[in-house]
Length: 579
Image 1 (tube, rainbow, N blue to C red):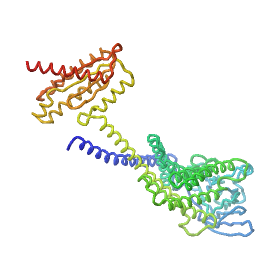
Image 2 (tube, rainbow, N blue to C red):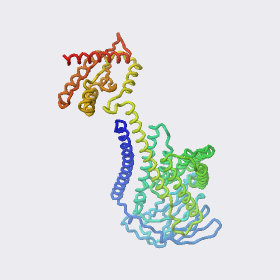
Image 3 (cartoon, rainbow, N blue to C red):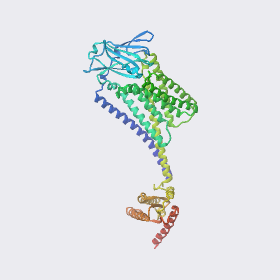
Image 4 (tube, rainbow, N blue to C red):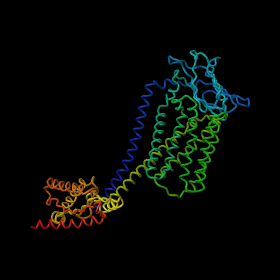
């Protein structure tokens, strides 16, 4: 096997090794992230005394009545009921509240969407919605209510009235008791695993987003998977909000609106990702139009939520759903139109996973609107598919990003190997003739006038090859190369010119050339002392030419002159040996 074959084989081996190494690193990061967040979560729960027993649900004790806007009424038991809409009034009664098991004050906790809420303990009103915000047009979205109960609450019925103040409808509610003053923290109780998974997905999607952004900058080529990572990051934040976990950080309106803001924002990178992956010009333009629409709609939703307009993100949510539905139809049309278009493997992974996520998302969209508008007694329809879609999207993103990362490493390695093949001597590992020419051209370009050009010829190489084999000759060449590198690497440049010939150049005055040449001769003597088993010690003929400010030389001319002087030196050394 010749030297080039060996190099190519080494390249293939390193490519395979780098690919597996890249995936191993990604898996390690994910594992460390999950274990790390799991450990921190357990510490947080233990430090704050959060346990499932501190979150006692009262759903099975609920009785209720819906007074519809047309005057009709509906009665129900449990925490699910027909859709409550604008103009309706929902009255919930806990006829036999749970006794306080905490030895401290108790809080009644629940979520309600865009509603005016009152809570009574017996005849006493213990909570009333702050109507000033509604009068100002600041509408709460999915708000977390914490009602401090009087000490004897268990002896009286609890009554909660909920009146929707916008067009958002709902069909269920969860009521539970929590130790007084610990309601926000106890949102985690019973949902530790969901919180851990969502936080992990947030960090992973954020990490992938940063990683792909860095790779895009280094490649000077935008990777649309960055947009998928951004979409995933925002949609996980939305899911954190929909689970109520944002209230762990804040009990203000920011937590209430943050959930919807993340959902509105997520539509922007989603539409941009689709646009970048569509080849058809008309459909691409339409998809970019959706991106502009979602950007404007987010701004509009923010304005009506935080100004005196009596509406919020939740109010215009049906419009957002409609726009998303139209966008999905456009995307599926593009899939059909471009069904024969070839794409890269990483892009194929992303698109297949993305399409699966879109299908799950469409099913969740239909389920959500059906349940919220019509209600249902079918148990499995009450379970959201959002977590499944997000988990599938995160997995897709990890696989796509992992392949992209591995491909980037392989590409860089291939470029480095090509550079080495082009400018590195395959036997000795030092710069080859092409690299030497490049350095000579650089001297000319920089108009360097002061330098010492040296030409070296290794004596007895042919005789060593013929008598003792090429292994001995290769050893002599490698020893010469190592010596050159040791002496000249920090003084200028050096390289193998070809066969038994080497060159070196020291920039600066003549005295620097003298010092370098003296150091080289000293190193050659040391090599010969340390390698007495070599049949032939290193014997090197050297030619040197100095270029000065007074008599500057063209680098190629200087090299040719040094070559001539080297041959004169070689003849002189031969004559001395014969004598």
